[in-house]
Image (cartoon, rainbow, N blue to C red; front, side):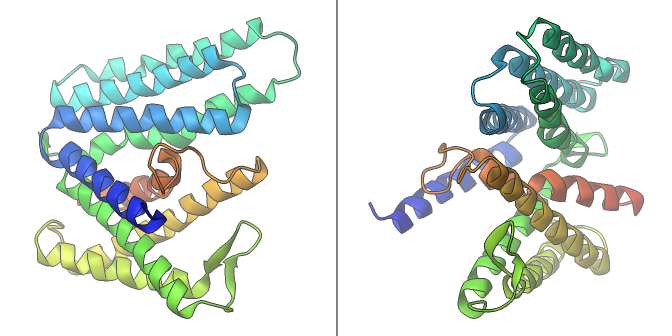
Length: 274
């Protein structure tokens, strides 16, 4: 199978899994996000530290999964919100586990462990606020966020490939293949997709808010993509993993969402639309 065919098949399967997790019922949504969180955090820790401090890493992953699960239970099962603070005890356990580390040569690794929670677990946990609206599970809004990110990626790739050759680079020291032409192509595709989502009723707020949201999602997605590229360049790694054939790891696929989705949710919340 050619690389293009492999990417197409695995990409279609990837989209099908996402649709099932977002549209069928809230428990499949929870399974999807928890799977993403565990996979992305494992990739992040392996990229940053290799196999060092695996026990502390699993405590951090447990803290992230617990935070998501408690927020999910708060919306789905009306759990007492005070229990959302429970993962703080696991964060303390991460720091306590550092006391049993042999030597002090890798103490910076514990900063990476805590960074994984801030970078991956918290944004994914906050997706509950987008997936549950008015006390009911309705992940169409969250699906709309993903559609904007995907359209931005498609626009940046196609327009950049078609018209961006030998043009000014967006961030040559981080990702030398990205150009300003591709950036504006992604922005146009993203804004166009937001109007389509408004026209179909998936985004049920005024069109100008849809356009502003698209700009925020696009900028956040670009920043998320560049941040992961910067991290991989620092550790001299090409892909975060190989779980999606032809596409790399989960972190490679969802790096944009880790900044774009929280920023989009913050905008809608401040505008009184979420």
